[in-house]
Image (cartoon, rainbow, N blue to C red; front, top):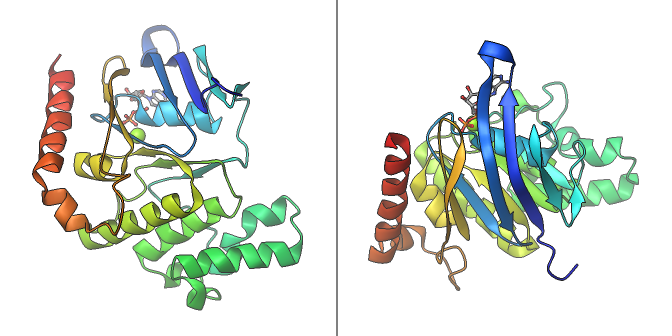
Length: 261
Ligand SMILES: Nc1ncnc2c1ncn2[C@@H]1O[C@H](COP(=O)(O)OP(=O)(O)O)[C@@H](O)[C@H]1O
Ligand SMILES: [Mg+2]
């Protein structure tokens, strides 16, 4: 597999509808990234971020072009690609533990394995003591944490996240960023992460991809130094550092230019 990118979007175009109602959501988007990368996608509303993610999730087939993972074309959804949306979409009639273990259960994983895996993930995210509660008994942050646990329980090779922290208050959001980053570092996960927040993208990503609208295009793919900075991460210190602020402003101005152009 030397030389084969972990994930490769090759000239992906997507059109919705037909005739006069046709919308060109994505135009010849090409993007590659490696295993263990944390790729953040930013860009104004309607530039095709969700559309791009959905072609890798397997929810949507490109009109032209191809999406491959480890050299194999994507053909529908699969457990090796976990998806987390802005709304946690939990099963309200299932407990925390039931929601967390749902994927492994439907795939027929042995009960003991499943329980051990779920327990480990719930402990990691501080949800273990709530295992017998129901989703409505959890805060928004805890619900979203559970949605992430549910995706991770399938042991995906890549986690696809579409504005996962968009509905959370600022403090919860920062805590969730730290938790997700910790999980990413510990498990050598690969993450594709869509966000409206340039600060979040520059802080979390090993890569930041900037998209522009009408039609949706990839305009820039920048490597980021902050995600792999060694040692204990002091988030406030990193985010107020001059190099960080300069990078954040650079990405912001790229988005402004692309929205005007
Ligand atoms: N199911 C759909 N039917 C028709 N048009 C759609 C559909 N989904 C998205 N679009 C359009 O495609 C473009 C890209 O949408 P989307 O990928 O959701 O962008 P983003 O996630 O960046 O906001 C937008 O113009 C949007 O209105
Ligand atoms: Mg979207």
